[in-house]
Amino acid sequence: MSIRVFFLLLCCVPAATAAPWDLSVRYRSPAYRADVLDQSLSTQFPVGSFLELNIGGRLSQSHWRPYAFSYLAEFSSPRRHFLWVGARLFHLINTADQLATSQILFHGQFHFAVLQSLHFFLDGGWHTQRTNLNGNTVLPVFSNASLLANNWALRVGFLFPVSESWGGKLWLGTFDDFEAYNLNHPFIQSEISFSDSNRQYTLFARYHFALGFGRLAEFLLGGQVRFNLTTPEPNLLMTSDTLS
Image (cartoon, rainbow, N blue to C red):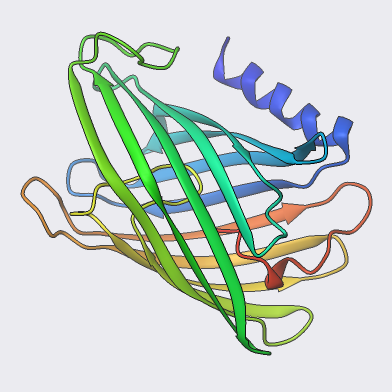
């Protein structure tokens, strides 16, 4: 299946299920590859009464030339509750370096209001990563991996719901809504969001720390818009599941 067909099918899911969907663009310039633009599309919708499914795809370009594509699928309990758990599969296909990486993440999050305009959240878990250095396979790498690594995952931070339409977020973590990193490569991220009746706009900035051998510091800027094609969503600034 081509990347264009995958994104086309992904676009049809929220339209068919009346689910919200997220479009995100971010810019970064790591030392090993200059001027990287990541474009992602994802959607989340209920599966029965006790599960939600989040699926998404991300296309990465360097100097406007695609070099990597990744996709994810995550099952979780309803994220509107103060406590929820999830299990995620993430797969990266790097066509430039001819390698593929798969991650499986198990995590759980709880959040609560410290004050009316200050909310705290803590998300922790464990992930395993398998890398195939002998080719960029489309299917996840479950066996015959060239490299295998296991690590803990953590993100902790605060939300600042200033009003019904404005809010902010500041958090420290080792994984986002797509990818998990090891504990030697954490990042801090700040966000500001504005929402109207059926969409939310978010601007964010991230800085990756270099705490271990082989890791490089990295600065990232991006924006995201969340659409709801039918009925309005509840106030998204009051939730902690809109991490980029």
